[in-house]
Image (cartoon, rainbow, N blue to C red; front, side, top):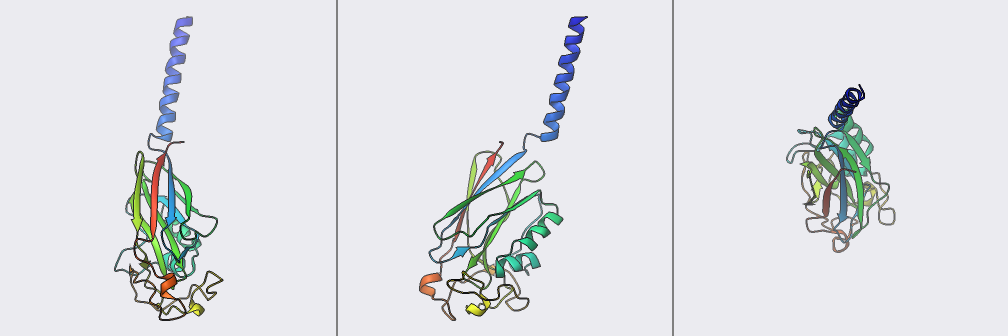
Length: 221
């Protein structure tokens, strides 16, 4: 009798373990994302990181930017883009607590599972009119780490007048309006950099791509 109860107990324990494994999944865990600002004279607004499924992208080169990306690229506001991503089925979206100066790094973690194994990352470059860097629907590593470099993109939603009246910051350089609807080229493309045509000094704020390094590590804990 005792042996029968023991065997039943083992069977139940094994079944519970299988159920728990199925619930969590061998691919469940985290993506640890470390972003480094490679520029000399541009600050990154708070970095947004999202984990999501296949087929979701922040933008397509040569196509118009969505409203959420427009607000991020012009004013550094991650809220609208985060809401769009979550409404479209993203698993997790996080935003850094502060800006990222040149030469500095920040690390963020987002949840991942078998169906949500893609990553998107974005942040505005300031001072600029509508420059941003991004990781755009990249499949994350299943083990170890992966390093990618991002150029600066232009959202194509605002004219690159380089005037402080239309640039949101940083406050010790500019304190303009930030997001404003209308203007621009109408499509996302590789940003040409700071040309020195307005209030910004190219020798101080221009860049040569890439502008950001992104290291992605798969974590199970």
